[in-house]
Length: 109
Image (cartoon, rainbow, N blue to C red; front, side):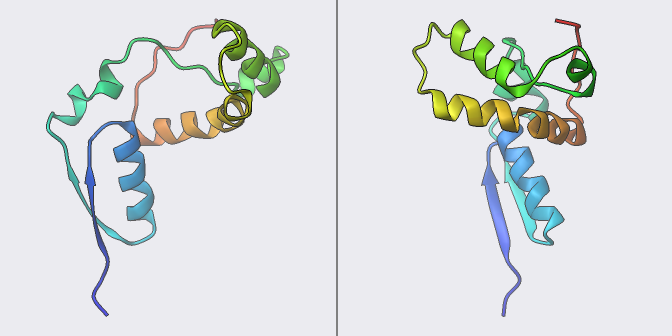
C-alpha cells in the first residue's frame, strides 16, 4: 500500500495546524500558499484572540465568562452553541498556536 501524502492549500493558522497534526500522525504533508506564511491573513489579523488560561483562571476567569463576553460583544446575534464550543476549545487552540510558534502580545485584559 502506498504511503499517504496530503496537500494542504493555505499557510494560515488552520493550514499550519492541519499540517502539524498530520505530520504528528506520520503522514507526509505538502503545504502550498499563495503568500509567504509570515504574510498570511492569520498573521495580518489585528482583532486579537481571547482565551482562558491558568493565570486568568486564578483571577476567576472561566469558559462561561468567555462565552458571555463573546455573545454580549456580538449583540446576542450569534448562534450560541458554537460560541460555547469555541470558548471551550479556545485554551487548546492557543496552546496549539504556541506550539506553531505564533508570537502573541499578551496583555492582562
